[in-house]
Image (tube, rainbow, N blue to C red):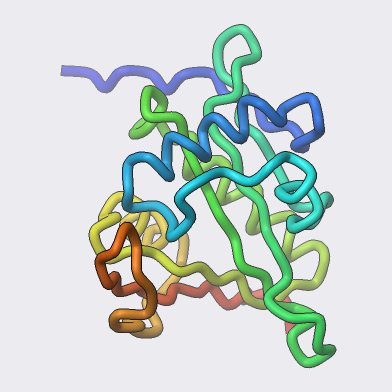
Amino acid sequence: MTASPRPAITLVPMTNDHASAVLAIYRQGIDEGNATFETTAPPWSAFDTARLAAHRFVALGQRGRVVGWTAVSRVSTRPAYAGVVEHSVYVCPTARGTGVGRTLLEALITSTERAGFWTIQAGVFPENTASLALHDSLGFRVLGRRERVGRHHGVWRDVLLVERRSPVVD
């Protein structure tokens, strides 16, 4: 039996033209309940302002449809943390398991390393096993579990802190 070919994916910088599709995929992740503590997607203006423009990508599938996105935010404005960012990666449910998440995260790693960022981190719910496996396969490691760090729909949730230290940025 042969494996099915991966769908053709094109990565492009995220722009305002992608706003509705990006926020729709974000809402899908929010609604599924294991992606974020957020319960609603922000307006595009807030989303756009909170993420570094040079390190935001969308994956385009058939007919140029957005099937996933990734972006980073600074963890702090303090100079000591200038090389540390927190990232998000979201994939449309119909495109999961096709390599979209890997393609996006690989592009993000390349982009942030070229810009001199030495650490990419994220908080991942332990129940999000697909995300944890993806991150592990790309060199992220689990630093620890933040127990009962926040309530999500009235239920205390743990978060695993994952990070990838760049082997090329000093």
